Figure 1 (tube, rainbow, N blue to C red):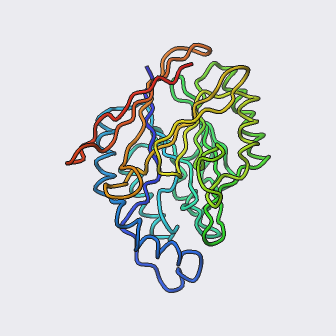
Figure 2: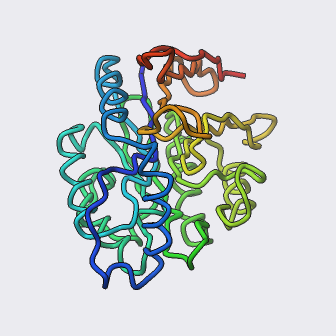
Length: 301
């Protein structure tokens, strides 16, 4: 059995104090949002409990689908690098960036260079940059393919972008790993499903992404961004459908309109054409908010 853990949207805090120059950009709106809302409900103590439980479950690999930080300040990028170093070996943790990691122009390349060991494909040279996606890592029976939808956007927008160049490369990787009989997992930040989020936060390129998966096939798509534990299905090859799984923000505490923190644990067995996949959601529960099993869903068709 291969066990894959999935978490997302860390929004690591506390937020470093930005300079006036830092705030002379889109960051001013994000800073206000952090002070009024996000900083009050997302915390390092909650994230630590989630990560401790992940480690206790001893997964074979961990997928982290973006938004490690908030305003993409240089100090935040360095903080996330330190957090990753403490969290897990780069060979055991695969990361893709989110829109907050690319909050202002130039930030995404800084983040990619700083976090390169966790988002570099097998046999590839680091440092990476925003053009280095998709990347491929093979771990046991699983092919983990990381793509980037992160791009700096205008104030009040958190949209993602999936374009033809990345689609062609993704199709090639899916076809190649499918021919090898691997369990193909696509990691993406924005949900590639219509209606999964509001228009100002949506993925531009949903149709292209779904077309790519329908033509080349995949076994599982993991995303973040919405801070919601969700399960959708999109067309795969032939009559198959592919589960698309979201997750609550990993540091989300109680008392917000968003669900408390959780992560997904996938148990994968079998072989190509006959995979058995069970998803176990684990997260904060009860008055004292311990981490425990929330639900168990068989994803195999």
